[in-house]
Image 1: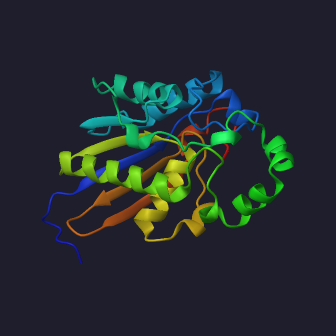
Image 2: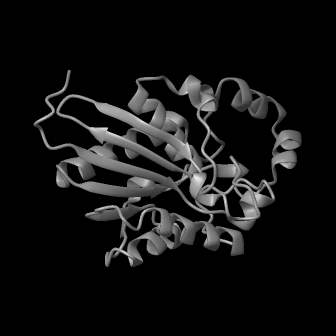
Amino acid sequence: MHNSNTPQTKIILIRHGQTAWNKEEIFRGRADIPLDDVGLRQAQALADALRAEQISGIFTSPLTRAVQTAAAVAKSHGLVPVPVSGLIDIDFGAWEGLAHNRVREQFPELYATWQTSPENVTFPGGENLKAVCQRASAAMADLVQQNLGQTIVLVAHRVVNKVLICHILGLPNSHFWQVRQDTAAINRFCVTSSSYIVECLNDTCHLGQLDTPSVDF
């Protein structure tokens, strides 16, 4: 058991709000796509849901869709989001900017592997899940060390969040598809001296008043 007297660091891990490419099922990766109108409303819903939290720092992927989401949360706390390169989205390489159905037609074998064994895929000209996990988990660990005993917000992406959650749970990336991450979802963890403890995964209750459902794409 962990020592209850040790100050615990709290992590609130958020997926950015919706973009047009989420809605249209286009692979985003490093493409710098802004939030659409629904995404902006989702970001405000996140801000409202986290308004009462005692947050000491907000750290974000440098891509616009994440920065916009982080900025909405930061505004009500008098904070400025800090870009962290390790939280940037996966590099989809040749898949970036392609619609889901086109990828399935153009890269049938690799697409089939992505659906069944994502841990074995390196995107043409891009990254694989192992590389994403290594950089994102290192960034998260550094931020925890810099904010011991505090509550911090990390704003990242679908793939980044999924591999981070697998990492926290001690699961290999073969479990990638068993983790759901909807747009503007909240995940909560606390960090003790020896481990991460999961408190909440893929919470979208704060989006209940919106007329457009959150999606895991």
